[in-house]
Every structure is written in C-alpha cells, then in structure tokens.
Image (cartoon, rainbow, N blue to C red; front, top):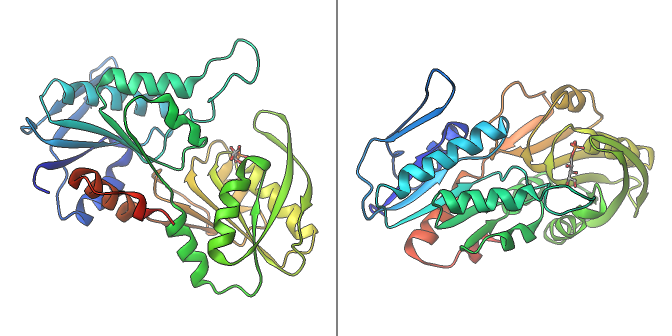
Length: 309
Ligand code: R5P
C-alpha cells in the first residue's frame, strides 16, 4: 500500500484521518488556504509522481466552496504526474438536481460530474448517491458504496421485537426494501406529497406499523421535514417507537432544532458529512472503515462488491 496516498480537503479532514488510520497510513501533506480575496490556494507538499492518489472531499455545505476546493486540488494533482487520481466524495452534493423535472432547469449533478473529470479525476469513489443513475453521468469508472452494512449492523444489535423498515417516500422504497430484507423486518411506505421545495405534506402510511418499532430509512436529511413528518404519521398509525436513519446528514436551516423537537427516538447518521451541535437524539456511525476498505480494493485491484450487503 505504500504507492497509495490519501489526501484530504478541508470538508473531510476527520473522516480522512480515520480512513488513513484504518489503512495504517497518515494523510498526505497538502497546504490549502485562501488568498485575501477568497480565492483558493493549494500546494501539494510531497512528491506524488507515479503514485495512486485518493483525494477525499465531501461536497457538503458550504457546497460551492467545498466543490471548488476539490476541483482546485484535482488540478494540482493532475499537474504533479501521479499514476492515477481518484476523487473520493463520501457525499456527492447537487445529486438532487439529476434531471430536468421542469422546463429550462439545469442538470447540475451532471455538471458536477463534468467538472470533476475536467479537473483531473480518473475515477470516482462515492457513497449512497441520491440517484444511483448519476454513475452514468461519468465516463470514468465509478465505485458506488452503500452505508447499509454499517446501519443494518447497528439496528440488528438493537434486537427489536417487531421492526418495520419505512420508506419516507416512493423514491426510497428500493433502499428500504434492501434494509428490510437484511433486518428480517417488514416494509411500510409513507406516501409523501411535496407542494413546494423544502415543504413536506405527509399523506398516509401504506403497510402495517401498529405496535412496531418503525425505522425510517433515507439517503439524506436536509431540513428534517421528511423524517419528522413521517415519524408523526407513523406514531399516529400506532407505531410503538420511531427511529430515523440516513447516510448523509446535510442538516440545512433549522434541521437540528426540528429533529431535536421531533418524536423520533433516535436518528442514526454517518460521518460522510462532519457535524457539530447535534441534538441528543442523533448518533453518528462511522463509514471510514468501509471507505478505507474500498480504497484498498481499488488500489490492489480487487473486487469491491464484497463490501455490499
Ligand atoms: C428525497 O427525495 C430525499 O430522499 C429526502 O427524503 C429529502 O431530500 C429529505 O429532505 P428534507 O430533510 O428537507 O425533508
């Protein structure tokens, strides 16, 4: 593994340190700062010629800053003659803009894909894309991991009497079905209607949740509205307790307050996005080992599919 180097952007320092530690390495030396006008300045402080370089940066809020920083880093690497550069985006921002769902709107998830490749990424390693089809926006290899093994393990250890995995909207059904299968749980769906962006109207529950421990599974939490409204309707339908879980805790606006005041017993998230000031109900599980193992597989050219559930 000594030809493999891991570098971190400012958004993913803690996670990158854990990944490097899992691989028995320390992070590569890179200086990232800002010029007085706010422009990003990057200098790689070690030789990367012929090396297999992994650049870890979640494009989480502040998304434009973090994305631009990643692009500038990739440009610095591609000009320093490594053998290969893999962009590691534990969280891929702009993924919700993945299609033209109304006239004259951009497909920004595709624009981000183009930018990453133009900046110098030879391959992409990412996790729980909001829409798995985003892989097809790239003509470079993409390894798409799932946090499910880590989250399923946690809920398995809780030994619930009658767990029901709940998809908080139709888009999450496939993900929820996989969780239900691995937890030996049944499946329910919350029929969610969204009248305006960032405003949720929950309608009704499809499936039996009476007396159950309901586990809501989503890829991300932004405002917390979806998770909170789903929890309320599940309790109203007789669920005994409601737990929430997502891979990417984007937590925009008042999300911390909203989740803290919600009836959710626990909200399980991962460390794809760094966190501060979480309400007591939120618990972080680390995906560092999973990402570390994937980096090892990519570097040693072995299959990553053993990392899926
Ligand atoms: C929707 O398609 C996603 O899977 C999430 O349910 C949604 O983006 C969460 O947003 P919020 O927390 O703002 O309701």
